[in-house]
Image 1 (cartoon, rainbow, N blue to C red):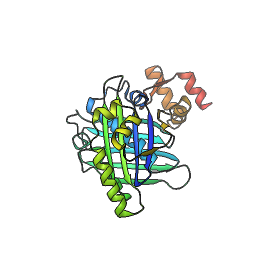
Image 2: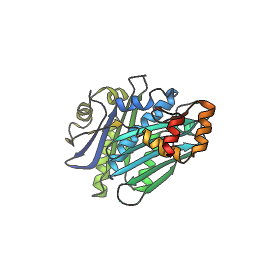
Image 3: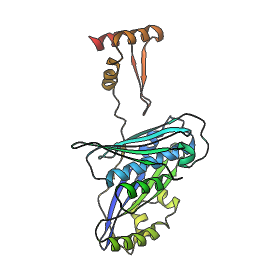
Image 4: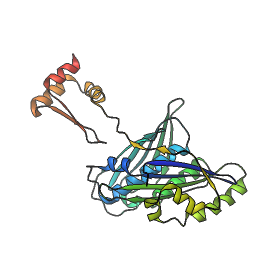
Length: 281
C-alpha cells in the first residue's frame, strides 16, 4: 500500500466531489518521541487527515492551520500545513487525559481554521466544538460557512512506528441543488459501508472501486503528503535576537549554554557563549 497520498475524485454523472487521504510516514514522524497518550495520538491523526482534506477542498495557495482549543485535558491541538501538503502538528495537555471523544479530550472549546494565502487576505473561521467527533465538528463548519452538504469518515491506528491516519470526504457541488442532494444521498449511503480496516489496510484504488464501482469515479493524480517542521538554526537565532544579548549570556553563565528545543520535531539547538556573542556581532 502506497502511503502519504491525497486522492481527489469526481463522478461523471453525479454532482459530488470526493477525497481520500492515507498517511503513514508523515504521521509517524509527527508523533515520534512525543509520548502522547493513545487518545491524543488518534486525535492528532484525525486532525492531520482533516487538514489535508481541507487544504485540497478550500482551494488556495498558502498556509493553513487547523486548531482545537478548549478547557479539557488537551489544552490545544494544531496541524499547520500548506497547499503543497507539507504538514506538522503538536498537542499540548494541561491535565491527565481521560476519555477519547473530542468533548472528553478538548472539553468546551472551539475549532479555529486559519488560512493565510500567498496572495490576498487572511481568513479565519471559528466553530464551537459541539459534537463528540471531529468529523461532525468539521461537517458543522461547512454547513455554517459554505452551506454545502459534507460528510467525513476517519480511521486511525496508533501502533508505535506503524501509525496510520486515513480520511474519506464527500461534498455536494453547487450546481443543481436537488440533483446534487440526491446524488450525495446515494454516495453517502455507499460510503457509510466503509470499514475502518478497509481505510487503513487497502490501497486507494481498491477502496474507491469497492465503494463506487457502479458510479465510475474519475480519480486525479494523487498529491504527496510530507512532514515538514520548518525549524532551523537561522530561525532560532532570529528568535534569540528578541531576547537580548545580556539575558542570553546570563543563561549561558547559569546553565553552560542556551538550549532551544523545537516544539514540533523536538530538535535541539545549542548556543554557547561565543555563539551568543557572534549573533550580536
